[in-house]
Amino acid sequence: MTSVWASLTVDARDPARLARWWAEALGYQVVTEKPDEVEIRQSAERLPGIVFVPVTDDKHTKNRLHIDLRPTDLEAEVERLVDMGARHVDIGQGEVGWTVLADPEGNEFCVLRQQG
Image (cartoon, rainbow, N blue to C red; front, side, top):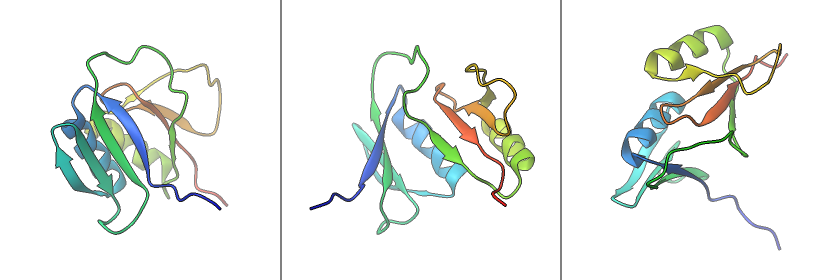
């Protein structure tokens, strides 16, 4: 027996705002919006989704799990995401071939170079 990955859950001070930010960043859509849960997916029928749930405390340490994005143009995508409200962060990565950003609530994610 195996499991199917249904969703990734993200704690958020403002779940609706952060869900919309990630939906725009990924080209996803909001498929469920309730006071205690907002879910985004590529389409309503396609898993996995990302579920944003409310918390009262701020994020204080580096993520233990993060999302990696692989656009066709790293520099253009980083610029787009920063224009949307992401910010550059240093998590001790040093000189690497990718860029580490944080979303509007401080959750780190990586923007990778295109494979090839």
